Amino acid sequence: MAERVVPEPGPAPERGPAPESLPLESKRARLEEALRALRGVVVAFSGGVDSAYLLAAAADVLGERCVGATAVSPSLARDELAAARALASAMGARHVVVETDEFDDPRYRRNDLQRCYFCKAALFTRLGALAAELGLPAVAYGANADDRGEYRPGMRAAAEFAVRAPLLEAGLTKAEIRNLARARGLEAWDKPASPCLASRLPHGTPVTLGALRQIEEGERVLHRLGFPDVRVRHHGAVARIEVPLPAVPRLLAEAPRVAAALVALGFREVEVDRRGLRSGRLAAEALRAQGGAVPGDAGGAGPGQGVTPGTGRP
Image (tube, rainbow, N blue to C red; front, side):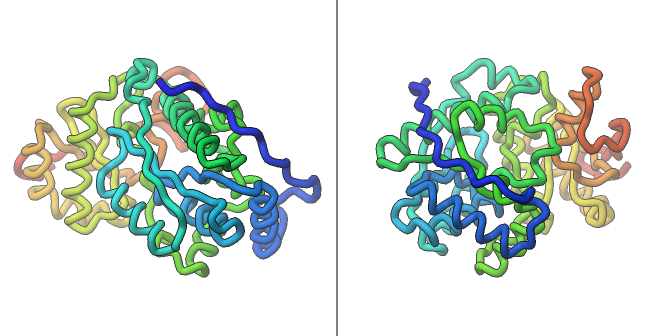
């Protein structure tokens, strides 16, 4: 694995009122001030709305002293890489693609509750080295103010590697970032969140290349059927599909086609989760099983709605 390179931290934001209490325009100004103070930055750019707005804001303030870096590994869907390239090009930002080696780490592949920590440690190691190569003093990523209340071990890695979170520091929430991204004309302003493919595997189930490809191809099938916000949870022979609650009836109507396509990918059974999509559900289930506190917990896991393979009939 790459040598750990920790960039020099930029100046911390000035003390003052809690940023969450500020009006939106004040938060935007606070973000720009923080970015200007960095004097140069590598932005971890996944193509999601948070990192897209952060990259756009940094490029507006810092120009050529800002570079967006998209990390390529087996856990990144190929469609996501293509979308990130197109988005960076549309906003006129400098953009590079780097490879990360988290898959070489058995602790990552073990897929316990610290998987995201090992993934982010590999990412920030690579981006720290890139920042040093380019003569840029800082690395930043797209954590926002809403992330404080969630289970995110990757934030510990960010702290250890002195990686800045300017959106969070400015007090910007996800909804506010979407509004700012829309005003900035970013196509990703309403893009659904899309965590890495490994997040579809229950904790304790090893991350394998075969499972990641099944997940990627399964979600591509659903995207083409008009479900942009979807998770194919990989439970060995069983695929459990989550879409937002209002889309569940339409998914059930498409069940025969969906089941046939996913069985062709190697799954033996397909389930539709009638509770709808919940980001972070597998981490919540693992925390609950260990007796830990679950942020925003709304109760037990409960069964999904089974779909007979090849027919789609419950």
